[in-house]
Length: 341
Image (cartoon, rainbow, N blue to C red; front, side, top):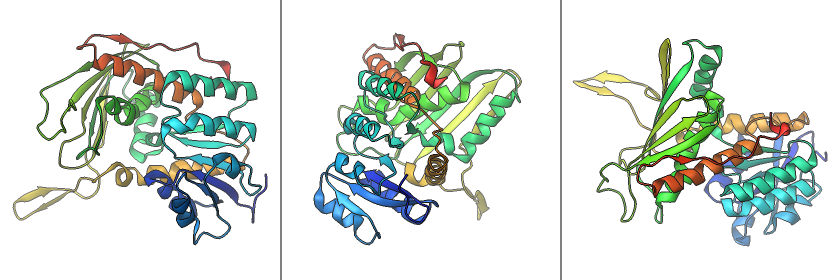
């Protein structure tokens, strides 16, 4: 590993909203790493991002950045369709990768990445499912793992956004939004999702034409648990994420009381975060720090290529369920390889 001053040289691929935020995070927040290279198909944007960061080289080609001798690891924050090529290139250089979700946009390409990593004989990839690093989700996970309230029977989720960007589609409601509930369901329950249903309540007038919003997403797990998610991406008032576990001996709920709750002059209440970056900023910081620390130890931890593949398979079933008028759609998964047990 070629490290300058004992730090991990990271190439950040993609300098849009998430990539630029990760550049800032590595440069200003995370310890033990530096931004050694940035990559964007827009050469001017790559150069603007690199300007002012000592020792950072801008590129338009991910392969060229990965061949840079100052690069020890890769953070992929480009659009999902570009992930497969970037991941396979990283494998040829044996570089550890933090890949923003999705691993890839569909299970077929995710499976190709998974098989390529298997051929290496060891993990190289951590997938960026940041909710696993959120303080509240970590507390809930610990309670469920300890069996504090007995066996978990159900999860109730709420996932609300104030509004959606132009061009947001029904399929994106699955791939870009409820994919997080897919991952936390698998993680919290330590079970695979085996089937999906999608119900469509009366649509809000705030949704753009052609978008069916809200939707109610139902998951079944291999252990027989049922999970529901209210997905409302044009609620108009802010960003809310809530998860309640219903167990044999009690319930545990997170997401209701972020920040300060006040009572004053005949009013009561608190604030609602405007978006996911603000709500999960601490989780993103912790995720990247943990990745840097593990990489410097020569280890890979966190969500794996299997988790990325499984999420893609459930998303595919979810999109089919959107068109199935409430019918149950089975999730198709290969047998889990030994590398990911």
